Image (cartoon, rainbow, N blue to C red; front, side, top):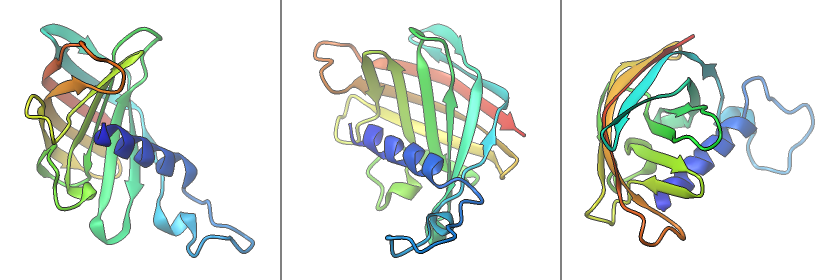
Length: 175
């Protein structure tokens, strides 16, 4: 469940801290939100996977979020119709391979979420039944590409729901 909250916080921060959002009057916060994060959207490309043995694809949207010295993060998410599987993959905006474990900090971990309302499956680093790997092959502000696979366990009030297995995940999204 922690990855779900982390991704929700990341998306909320990304939306709230849009680029060019510099305040013109004093702010009650000790920092400018524009200095903490920026948001950019990419929405051309492909986003596909095999979910429980069935081919899946979604219209991709990528959101970037800057987090200072820890580096930038990205989130690729699908924008499907109601009642369909919605997939989100998040990780550091840097070429490399990342796991969904309890890394020393949030910024070096991968986050995976699959939602089919009312149930959400994610990688829970404390549950040995779940795991995930993200490989980023292209990482820039104009293009993000890579592969992923994970086994998500149900969260919240989804007692009795089976884990979901996502394999052969790919994304290649650009401006």
